[in-house]
Image (cartoon, rainbow, N blue to C red):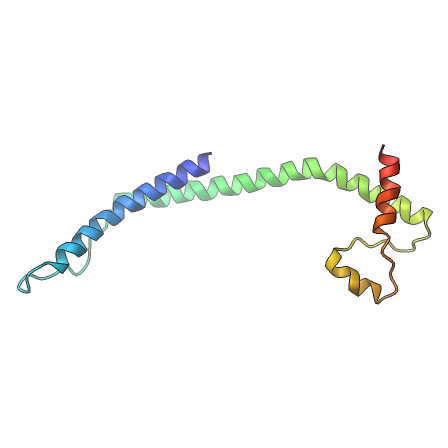
Length: 132
């Protein structure tokens, strides 16, 4: 929620900062040829500083959110992964698998060419029978 609030503040400040530029551009378009068009539009340094400060806060909150998420994921998923890994090693030992390799489905074709056997469904059935 804090991230969305900061994003909204930044958007408002940037919009406020762009408004004077737009009006100056319109005025320059309708200026007489004798009038010199402004070469550059002065920026509101205070607004730009606020945007930078809010952007820094936003970046810090995003970094903290990523850190909190990683810690929460480790706390929740870690024990489950450990249980599955222990089960996989027990399964491998009891089914004569010399090496058990966890692979993504994209890697299965390459593993099959090395003489590997896909025991995923056997393991899932075996693991599910012991989990209940």
